[in-house]
Image (cartoon, rainbow, N blue to C red):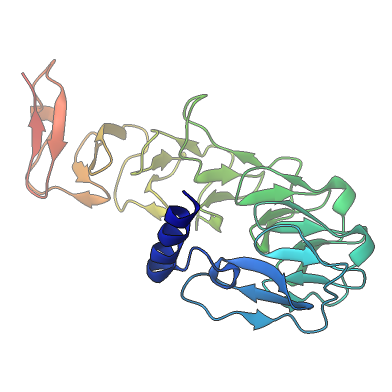
Length: 259
């Protein structure tokens, strides 16, 4: 049985290097030195200045020893090693800062709270991954279409609406709302209709509605036009839509209906 296991391990290592710690992404200690590697296709490198005896891996990217903290094999300047710990996702903290990689993100670690894998906030700001996006954490909210909504790309604070962490130009945060839960996201405010982060030219937000959305298609209409994603479908008049028939899709020339 042991011979079989050895043969299998040798065969696996020939394909993916499964038996060698040197090709597994992250940190490892060997012969009194600390190494970091990005993965199977990356050569390991010595972590300069790391103390092997006190070295402690926190995640695949973060680590610390008795004197320093590290991210992806690089020393984090100014980090307090004694209190340094991995939070989750891409963030770490010590007594003075929240860290995004080797860069300080927040100096309010006591109030830093992750919202999801991309967003977090403290007492003064809202952050997306490694940058600040809002100075209004008190009013910042993710916009959900339904309680079990998993497409959490829209958010807003008191002044600004956001799509995937970017401000939506010209959007009115006070009246901004989502219209569907889909990969093809639609939203409106009092002045415009939006497809993802783009205002739909000429669309009427008062009558704008989603007709059909799947993982492959987004169809919408207002009182005068039909749209595929954010583009008008020419020569299609919503007034001619058959009453009581469900929309089954659209393309560049038509909207289709079921029985």
